[in-house]
Amino acid sequence: SPNSPQLKQIASADLIQKVLDKGVPIQVITGEKDKVIGYRQVENFFAQFPSVRVTRLPGLGHDPFEEDPQAFCSAIALY
Image (cartoon, rainbow, N blue to C red; front, side, top):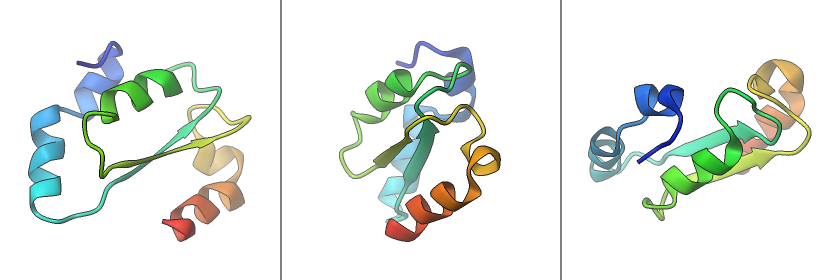
């Protein structure tokens, strides 16, 4: 289970599994310096779902889409 209350609010194992069962691909993008939900917590939680891609963006925090939109969009495009 996730250690972060914020991660627990947005990602329940049941919800993730239901989405995956529908065949919807999931990519989670996290900033390496995220102090709200640490990237290690994100990686540990989603490790139970091998088909979920977790992308860690180096040097970025909780809002990587604002901090470096190009890196964020590149991560999406590569998926």
